[in-house]
Amino acid sequence: MTTVLAMLDRNTGQLPADDRAAAEAAARALGVDGITAGVGTGPAGTVLAWGSGAVSAAVDHLQFTLGQGPGADCAETGLPVLAPDLMASGTRWPAFTPAAAALGVRAVFAFPLNIGAMSVGTMLAYRGAEGSLSDGQYADAVGLAIAVTVVLIGRRSVRDGGPDSWVPAGWAAPQTYRAEVHQATGMISVQLGVSLAEALARLRAYAYSQDRLIAEVAADVVGRRLRFDGL
Image (cartoon, one colour):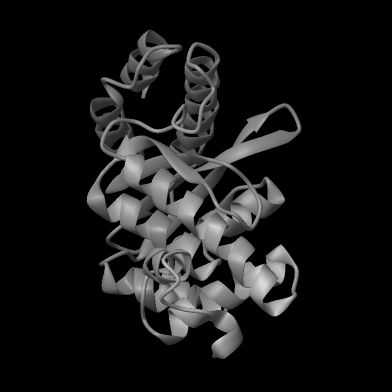
């Protein structure tokens, strides 16, 4: 972990050229199979900004689509959420747990990215096997979350602050489709005469009932192929 922190220190305020290497080294140090970090809080979800791995990104996408999971709870409370045995937590996240299990994920650990008392995002690690973090691994994860926060804040401060400020190369899609989700939420709010929060909940519920990604349904709404006032 000392090596990982040194790698992150070199990248503070810079473009994320070495993010994948640092994330893979961090995963090895923590004894997990993948790790990512995203910025953003609340029901709108996070935008991936650091890390590597298709499964890690898929877990984040699942939480955004379903509106539940350890990372979602962590973003809401600003506190770590540890699920060393997802199947034992099935009643807590009834939609997320089987979907994550289908990806081969059996344990998830979420840590807040905090600046003082303010949470700005979450760091999510997963394992393909059940098992808790050791005391040392937990302490390392807390330290890593602090370092990642510093990197991302520094990186944003030296960029233009635009919508892609947090997004590393190759991960532009999550930022793009989440903007489309927000646009679709606004359209549904107008169609149904409901709040944005209820519109987002209905969008998620429809995507879940149709076994589709929320991004796909949002694209249909924005493209005017689907109206919620006609459902």
